[in-house]
Length: 427
Image 1: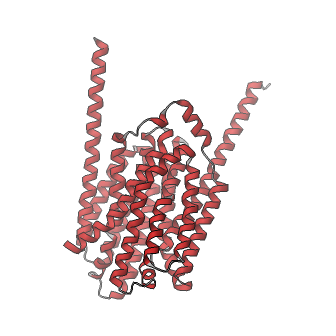
Image 2: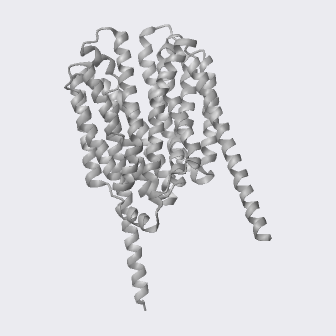
Image 3: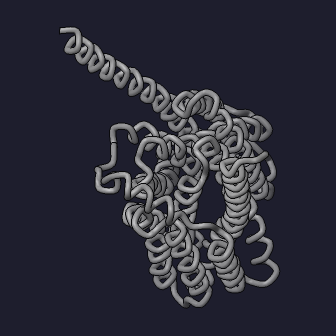
């Protein structure tokens, strides 16, 4: 004979299963929305120098300089505003911030197809960096809604989708621009972002209940961020994104020195970048699973060292096949770091401060996106095409040793504190 408590247990079990099913569906919808949003933002990247020439900049060199300035402008304003959006995510919820970033991006990018001068395009790119940031907002939302035991896995899957979209977006955008024109491509991007916003609005759950519970537990939302605990992962995120983007300016010239047919350079560079993006996607998926077994710090430290070791020999390759293989290996290790570092950021702060923490992480990442290509271009121009690979290889290995040193100092500090407490208790 079943007791009333047994029925209550059955109802609780059914309710839990329904919440888990709703959470999984919400996560799948979020992944689809980010596939559309990231592919949309990357859709217009391949033809930006050509678009600048259509706007009146006749010199190919000046057009390339304008394209570089346009990319740096977006990264700079995003780095400045990301912490603000992160704090607002803690107050109003990450879903509202994701909607803001996606829908604002739809409007701003759509307007880019209507400009008549490069300075107008520059102004919109500055505005884009100020108002958007879908990846950071989606990361906060996944972090806030994922069960504790599935946090690393879901962050890894999210980063995998982002890498796939980042690799497919430029390829599709270039083809579409050749077929229907560049201005129409901005319209396609706006439509993709609008569709992503609609998916988030109606298909992704909010975290209002979790925020209310966190606020009731204490004043965690008013505590300062623990920058000491965040510093190792912020360093890792900066180095990884700077390395991912820092060698891109040197890649076409480097490939041209390895092949006899100059007509193949552009296609080979695109293929290598695309293959590297897919390798990074796979690395993100694997890294999220490894973190659950070995811990985030161990995975990040090891992957940084392995990435650096695969960067160094790229400077001395003798053919494209060797470069291709090493780029795939390095990108795999770099891709494994990002979701694991995000998982460590999540575990370093209280739930009420996750938005602020990820806002700082997004600011660091945006700074790397701006400084990476600039530094890589200067290194290639000053010391040759192999220099960016060497420098970033040593930087990655140095970052790995830095994380080991931080971990050692942390253990010694807490070990000393433990001994002091123990001595006080014995007296």
